[in-house]
Amino acid sequence: MASIRHEARRSAGRVSGSMVLLLLLLVGGGGYHYYRNLEIERQNEGHRPYESYSTEDVQALRDAFESELTASEAKFAAAKRQRARPQGDLGSISGNVEQFAETTATSRAIRAAAAGVAERRDALSELDRELALRASPVQGLMHHLRRLTTI
Image (cartoon, rainbow, N blue to C red):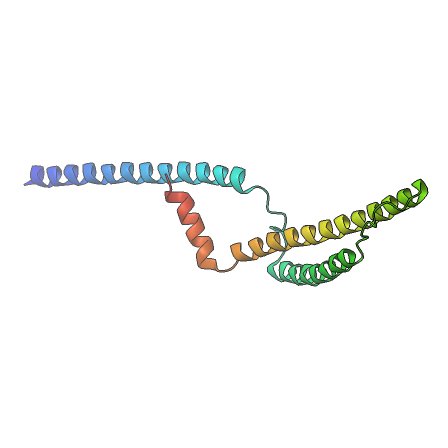
């Protein structure tokens, strides 16, 4: 009778030992995949410049950039309207040089205004991406779960 109980305990111990080993393998494999996928994300996604800001601050910054974008687009449209149209050969070298200088100055103003619009659009898209990453807590949990389970 005692040996039957002893055998039952021994077989139960073997099963629990196997379960512990399986659990350790799963935890180790999950940790390895999480770290590996985190490094891959860091290399692919790059640095998130607004990561340390609160969501309210990021939203306020986004609103400010949106109003700046509107102002920059208006400045760009005004610069395009001021574009100097060449009038052909004016007959004198000084007239042609003056016309060239005028055309160059307006072209620079147009390029500067276009660069301002592009910079604000880029910053706005970066802020939108940051807000999308923070959109829902379930999405963050799924992000961590995907890191853990993706092979």
